[in-house]
Amino acid sequence: MNGLAIIGILLIIYGIAVVFIATKKPPTVWNMAKIRAFKKVLGEKGTVIFFYLFAVACWVVGVWLMLS
Image (tube, rainbow, N blue to C red):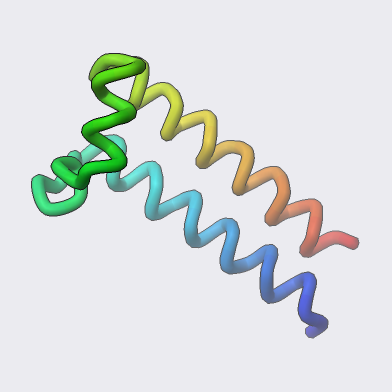
């Protein structure tokens, strides 16, 4: 297993964690300053959509790295 495959696996796991945070909204994470700034700019629903899109991007790049 090469380094790119390991990075790909980590990106896929990171994407799963982002989806978990977006769906469950744990208070310790959801009230962080950076996420509060996202909510202020994008709104609650926009922040969740942004997280979903970011997770999909992580999955796509992770799978691409694993296959290359």
